[in-house]
Length: 277
Image 1 (cartoon, rainbow, N blue to C red):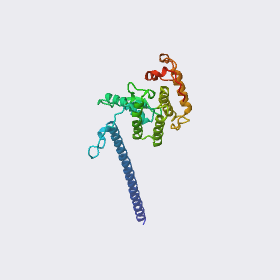
Image 2 (spheres, rainbow, N blue to C red; image 1 turned 90 degrees about the vertical axis):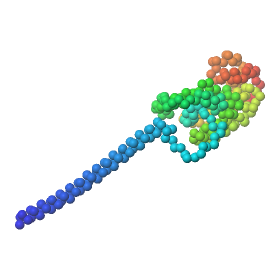
Image 3 (spheres, helix red, strand yellow; image 1 turned 180 degrees about the vertical axis):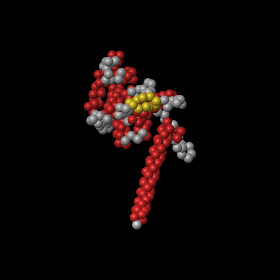
Image 4 (cartoon, one colour; image 1 turned 180 degrees about the horizontal axis):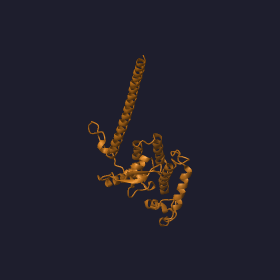
């Protein structure tokens, strides 16, 4: 009959609607579960970021302490200036003075247990503003230029700064190159010469060569193998020191090429030298 046919059609329509409702309900539940999952992941990421920020601000509080006996310590452990270590971390030129006995004593005297969390703005390598500790932004007072170091101070500093290079993950080939460069400096006949001009020349050459080498690392031309002693540059340095020795030290204030402190260190430089490099 017509009623039966209509009823069966409505039943089929109702069953189709039930199936569709179940499908939509399941789909909505899946979407809700997925949204909840994303929300939980975002929340966990936010919490992890907040914890990481707190750990950075209170680094020493969260350092892991290994379960071991107290390690053996020696007098070889030294306290170096924060300023020098910051330079070393960046791979920049830093004076050897900081690794001499005088430089280490200066760092130990000026070290204090006051709060070192104070920060000052600085310019990063990419030109952006970065915040660094105030202690690492100030050079030590009374820093002695490399060319004015005594041979004893020079020999004290070299092993220490080479070890510092290694501790701060400098490229092994760069560390080896600098170590061999300084080895070549102390083995050069200028180093043990009786002529004070030669002694001052080799120290001034070492400082200028190392400084120039560092300055060209990031340039378009790049650096060079500093181990190879440039005889022409060494001759020019000798000539500058020699000609400056012919002038009274108090008249050298306008000479920006040669350190006037060389004359304070070697008063005998006013004697005309016959040494040939």
